[in-house]
Image 1 (cartoon, rainbow, N blue to C red):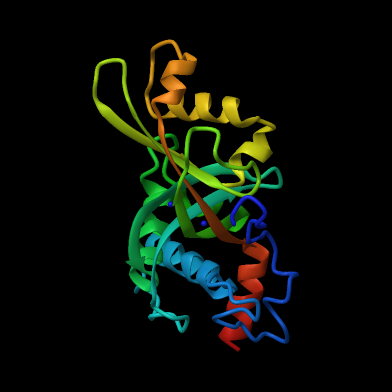
Image 2: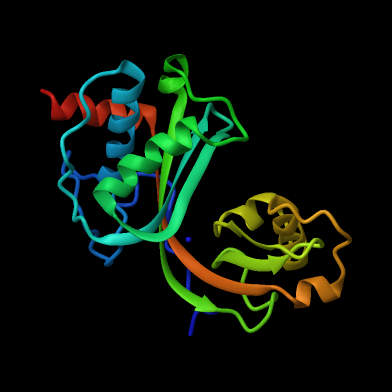
Length: 227
């Protein structure tokens, strides 16, 4: 939803890292990353059209290659989570971002749908998932570098999966065991979490390229585009 233990997580959480220069919005950054500012602006465009029930935005200019991706909406100065949904299946970026900008805003079951009144307080993050590798066990990943996806069997014998993006564990201050246990609970595991349960997990680690744009940044872009 990425030797890796020494790699750095490719994340940029603002537009101050060379993504915007003189209102030029590159589709591929010089360091070879896939994620770009225009992807975040496109998510804002898509949400804006849905909230206003207006025509959908035109196809974006960034490449339409296929990747697993997530779209995350946060709100306010404290960046409270308002929705985060994505897919581990590779999707063409144009249709994938169009779909998940809406799905994460309106269909995250943890939250009520985002409203028009909230639009001007939002931040959007696009995460492009890359470099997937099977972990040797549930401890075979590094905090702050890898996102993890686990596959496990519930206490009732059913198969389940759950994931955390790379930023979740450091944001929460969790170690690896705390992260695994939280992820099991997130996925619906209700039994006692023993070391045997943890050892039974099949873990996949990955990295993400992440970029975040605020509404004021989107507004500046929108004005410059429509001058």
